[in-house]
Amino acid sequence: MIRLSGTPKEDGFYMPGEFEPHAGCLMIWPERPDNWRLGGKPAQKSYAKVAEAIADFEPVTMLVSEKQYQNARSMLQSRIRVVEMSNNDAWIRDYGPSFLLNKQGTMRGIDWRFNAWGGLLDGLYFPWEKDDQMAVKICELEEIDYYSLPDFILEGCSIHVDGEGTLVTTEECLLSEGRNGQLSKAAIEATLKDYFNVQKVIWLKHGFYLDETNGHVDNIFNFVAPGVAVLAWTDDKSDPQYAISRECLSILEREKDAKGRHIQVHKLVTPKQVHITQEESEGVEAINGTFPRQPGDRLAASYVNYYTADGAIIFPLFDDPMDDAAREVLASLYPDRQIVGMQAREILLGGGNIHCITQHIPKHQNPAR
Ligand code: KQY
Image 1 (cartoon, helix red, strand yellow):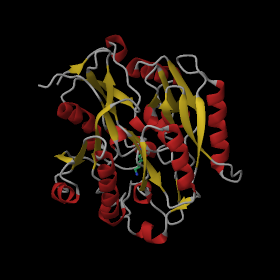
Image 2 (spheres, helix red, strand yellow; image 1 turned 30 degrees about the horizontal axis):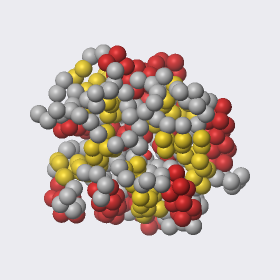
Image 3 (cartoon, helix red, strand yellow; image 1 turned 45 degrees about the vertical axis):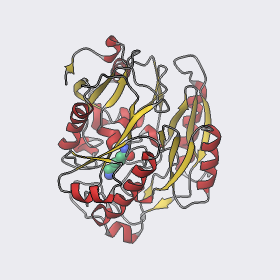
Image 4 (cartoon, rainbow, N blue to C red; image 1 turned 180 degrees about the vertical axis):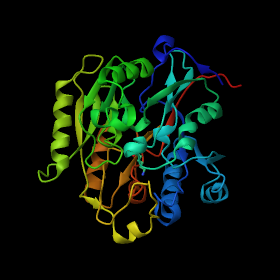
């Protein structure tokens, strides 16, 4: 496949919204014992269930290391395609390619640099070179040409687009020292505009409280459709999340999107606080250089971190009374999609949630080779 010069903007390519039609979904099989308890066994069951739920609506491909191939193949239904691909961990949204389309429906990819959410400064593990190589490998697998940035760090969970010229992100993440600390906010915004081909970037200040990725936007905000969004919310003034959510809301109320619309914001109230138990902590191997999992640590539990599938919303359940309220909000916002809840604690224990472990492939018209 061709590594392209120039930019998507110059070539008329843009990133469609996740709510637009899909060709399928990619995931990576979890296994590293210093991030997933008990060698990844409970997380593997959760990933398999998420894959099966999505496979009811669109084709799913699971990328799996050589070591885990046989195990994953036996744990996954035969309708799920299993492809061997080496990796450092299982966060496809962050280091898979950003998929782009042009007006004719041709698909291309972007290969950003990945440094485990902050490199040696405040990253979450080392090394990360297999993850960093995945975007190109996936472009080869999907048979698409791609743009490659030699030194710009970006994770897919750190941006959301409406497919109509607007991108939402957080300053906490994109301006963090460990990513592109040498670049100004204006230079970072210019790269986002050139590569996602958007006209408007809305900068939230912070992501979800204690999100270990320096506040990825996908745990606090998501587009339902152009001009319509969800925001993680709490009315508990004693929770630091309270001020963060209010700050996001006031920015979103003040800003307009690329088409000049005020974004209609719907609140998804968070579950009660989720903390790591002693037993869960003991199941994770402590390795120097990997983000530790201490008993009592609060996890960034948010219903906003859901996957928009063709015909369904796959959203996280936390065994909490707010699970039902979240389902109701999502049902009212997505009347044409089934609302499917999945127990997500084991995924959350690894530091992210359903949106972070899935990457949709937009429906496209690339000729079969
Ligand atoms: O939320 C995400 N996008 C990934 C978090 C990864 C954490 C690694 N422990």
